[in-house]
Image (cartoon, rainbow, N blue to C red):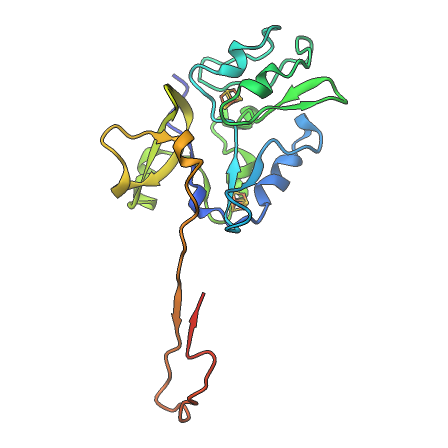
Length: 226
Ligand code: SF4
Ligand code: SF4
């Protein structure tokens, strides 16, 4: 077992602030020549500005590889599903259609599918993937279980996802609220697609100092509700 096998990727969608740092950092990588392999999605653009970063989940049984007629997608011994091998990929798009997380993208100009390989050149030697090094809110976190447990006591990682009858286990973890997690934690992705973002109310109270002048009755900043 490599000495860094205890390092894992944790994705916490609720912490994403939509700053695009991960997208920019990913696009600077020379191996995919200016294209970002991480995608920033809106959960429900008409209802909320909440974004969620989407990386390859590195499935234990990758559907993308199973449907590839050219055997162009390989999974390494340490569980990382690689991007398509150039000499083999015939750009048929099967993997794009089959991936349950909507990750692979076809680059018609280059006749190849490319996707996130968790910065394998870095993570295979124990370094963080580029996105996790720049994410200011740690929505993308690369580290140990002990670190994430200490940092996020209210959340827990899950790597099991159900799509109807099918359950998929992944190398990448998604953080879910600890108190809401069922005994056998998994995310039902199909039913979650119908959920609407919840209204969130934040109250900011302005505390006045003793020396403050007599408060104005019509003070617009006395209590701000967002
Ligand atoms: S998330 Fe999609 S692209 Fe990534 S390994 Fe799983 S099936 Fe393949
Ligand atoms: S860097 Fe982090 S916070 Fe910024 S968009 Fe990406 S995931 Fe969200």
